[in-house]
Image (cartoon, rainbow, N blue to C red; front, side, top):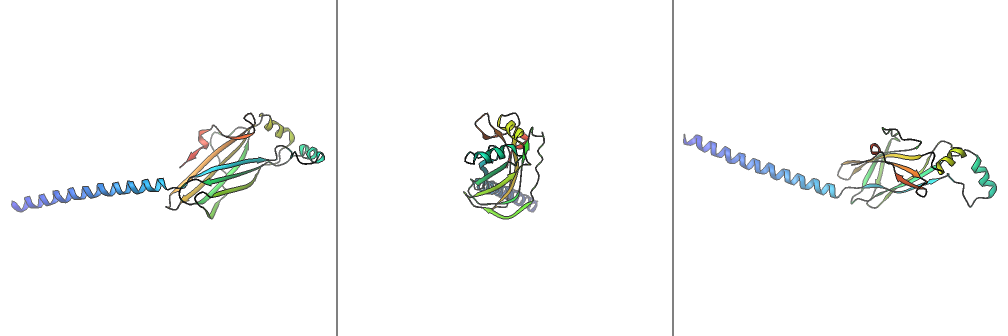
Length: 194
């Protein structure tokens, strides 16, 4: 009987020690996750510009008249900045211009993997020359007058140095009523930041 009590006491002590070790391991894991979250990269839009909507005012009058009449592509350039505390690697990027209303469900055309592109802390990722289909003067005028809405939608997938995957999804609307600026589109389905 004494042996059984001793075995039971030893089992209880072992179980208590195992429970304490488990609790300590969970606390350490939670602390490590907090460090990873605090030190993560944050890839955010820094600059967004639209070219080709209005003729270049420095061009000659003949060139401006020609450009105003001909259909032409609009060009969007954007820059993302890593505002986090660690570098990140961009895995995938997709972006496109939408004229008119945004669909209720986003459809990001994937530009495929972007391998080996590391963005250091404070560094940027420039996306040059996203172009639209050719747009005639009537539609460009409608955009300038706010009768036709121009959106830029996109999706950037990137990974931290800790191997954690992140995504930034966005949608901006070109607002001429607010002074010809890009404004965050008010469609929640297009926004995600993880």
